[in-house]
Length: 114
Image 1 (tube, helix red, strand yellow):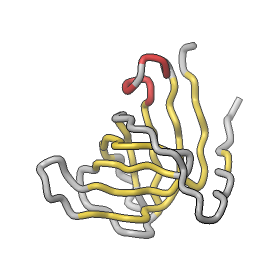
Image 2 (image 1 turned 45 degrees about the vertical axis):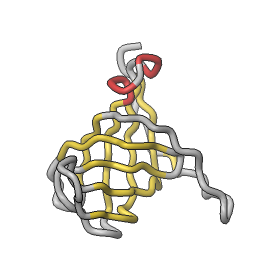
Image 3 (image 1 turned 90 degrees about the horizontal axis):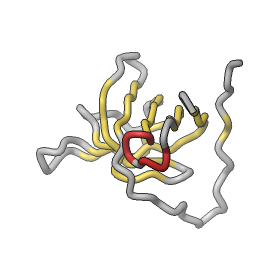
């Protein structure tokens, strides 16, 4: 059975989504179609903050696979497939690499092997 991506509900104007400090591995790709590796800094229902391998362009589309199972034992076998767009891209000031904020427009939770 194929899972469909869900559209994220629109936030209430002026409300900011609660962020969770979760450092999870991410595979991401933009319009070039090449998968890259990154790590989340924090996640909310509306987006995530991501350390990337290279700089990305604001307003570019982004597809991500977040491996929550690697970040928290209680999220065993859970991956989040999501689509969105880059809303902020900062040049690195530390050796950790560039940081990108991505808004999530569609998502799908996937449980594997449970």
